[in-house]
Image (cartoon, rainbow over all chains, first blue to last red; front, side):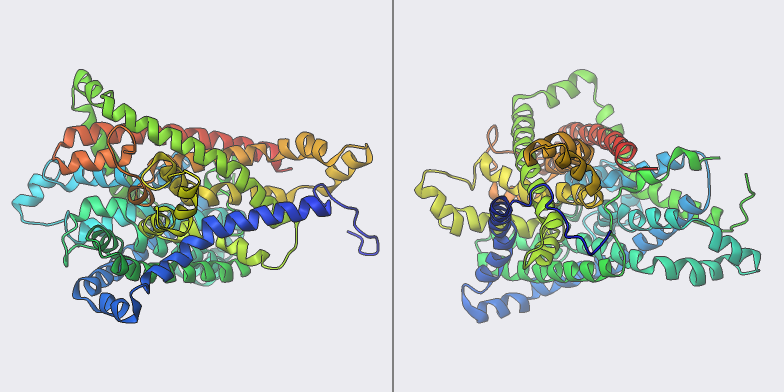
Length: 293
Length: 273
């Protein structure tokens, strides 16, 4: 593009139209996106600092925070390992059924969290496939930490994979093939050749996965049984306080998750600056039929 | 074809299949198995009961209204963010993702606080006779919030990649802005808009956390399908829960098929070889 010539006005550059459209978008954005964030802070401190601090120091709240953190510490790394393995298998190799596997991987994205929760009930619940057997051996999956972790892993299954697959597909196999032919082991090839090229995209997926795990409500509310002080994660604790007419406490707990959400967005923007997640291109379309043998 | 020399197929594919099988396929298969173990007559009685049908109606209508609103607002947002430069643009761009980052339960209580009769917006709206919280309108607003980023984020990259030469050519032929938008730009955006629309609609159909706080949850009027499933579970009516959940699941599969088809089309028509 020549810089000497002044660019001609493009469609929609009429100053009046431009200002009007920016004005409408800013107004709606402030009402629909910004206001919900601000109101959380306002409501959390409505009864002052003391109530805020007391809510967060409450044993049930503390337990809910702990449970949410533990769930994320288990679910997010497992999901990351899956995402890396799925991306390696699907971009470095050709095999039959790859497209189908990719579509199945992305299913949790379009399934209601409530449906996910019910589905887990029919696997591990007493009326489910393994429920009676698990009960006989006294293994608790539902209404306990394992169920919460499993349901969280379902809703976030595609998060890391869908960041890595388009990128690793675009980068091809030449570098890895060169490393292997020079005698590097598979692990060495992965850690010294592949990982440095995809680390920001991977982190991007991890950040989004973590936000979703910590905030998941529907699926977890079914598999956890909402046992106060035992299986209440932070989002469930918020609901409990809210319906208990402790609005200030609910908003105080919500403010923690809102702060995490804001940090998630900041991390997301920072990682986009390093080239991660630039395009919301669904991974599905990038594994084209031509890459099959 | 070259022989593939890379190692790790067995390990990586093994982990992938194990994970997908255990985490995704097994539960969904169990749900379908449970629902299909009901006889057809029994299944049909449950899924076509007046309360179930009322829940589909309110869910689908609110999702449709929210998606149409987001179609216009999302397109306007994407347009403003890619075409214009103004102070605060990058902050708005980042904030578009807030509905994805903010947990749905948090969004639910905060939207309820805004739109209830004594809230910031609710008090203004009730003065002119509009009630939002605990009505289908509230359901729609919650859906608008949670599904907004889909349309913005699918349209934005296509708008960024739009070749200015196309517009210049149309301008040199004397087309007005509106004509060029309608006949040149909109057709190029259409596949992305449709894909974003179907994602947004699918998300709205399954949304739970953001809605249950602001909806009145009254059977036959403001009870969404996801909540009806939840209620059936609390009543220990597992068969009804399985049957109604299977309806939502099959709808999700149908939406997934439509979205994939649209995305394949979008790729064919917007990306030059």
